[in-house]
Image 1 (cartoon, helix red, strand yellow):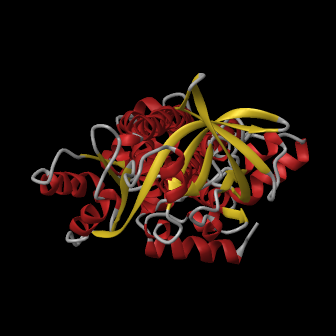
Image 2: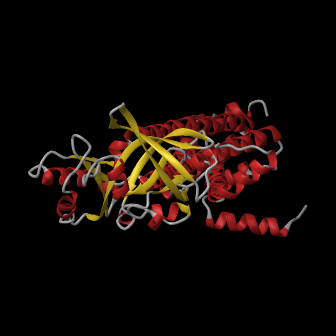
Image 3: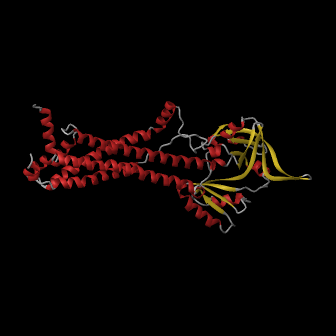
Length: 431
């Protein structure tokens, strides 16, 4: 039937596109006589789209985990820590003055570390004690923002106040205003023998870092109170340092170590060393997942081989007629390369769109699925993070899309060569 719109569309395609592109476009349309070839083409597209979207989503989630863990760890830890061989530093004020001579250092704060046993009327558990200066702590981390009940400034000297992690408080049934006892290994010497030291503290606040390791195993107290309780006199366990660029921590730590070598024996460590195994494992998992999911895309891309082989067989007479009209083998080659490439490009673009949308909205999608099926994917007492984070990187999308399209183009080469070598006489002999 005469269709003026269709004829107009075809004339425009002929005018602006090479005839190889126009024919490839005709072959890629899914309204073909051979519906099985159309089905295989659609399957290849869907497979590539799903593989690309899955890879984008998973890499975004792993980037989010890596970034979130780094942020939470450095919210309690520090970019650089300086201590001595016996885990004590005297005259730490002079040390901090020397540290601030470096332009990379933007903040420092002393700390005291110890271990003890927290005892309440509902039970007991081991605890990591950290003595901090509420005035200086803000120079190196954001603990103040993590205190949900009370304030960091409540840790005043000689008040013997304590701020506990939220999970510790839940497990032992402790609320703000309660009094708890802490036992430490350092002994008190009496005529009857040596006994563990014990002191009563007032619970003045609750903090929540968002990492079970800290929320269930750390208690904050005033620096001077910790020095008295742990019998450290005026010494501290070390000095924590914040620098301008946390990713330059290894270089700055080396520079500070060299600068302090003349003043005595100091141990300078940065966050990359302290948590090196952990972040290396995350990076390795990311690479492995990239390879595994890229194989899925490769399988879907090489389905294009099957599609084109069947298309070449189905279009043998068309190829023969084109050659009879003067089409060169190179033009036939281009037709099927373009046809297969269009399948890969459309699948890749669809996958990039789907993956980007899901990755950007995963904070809403995951809670909805958890609520719908009444499950929790990340239990807080098992995993470091109880929420699924996401960080979408343009570099990841670019690499994934490029490799997907490249695999699709490679998959077209063999069938396209076979099509270009088709003999018109052989193809039309039985027609």
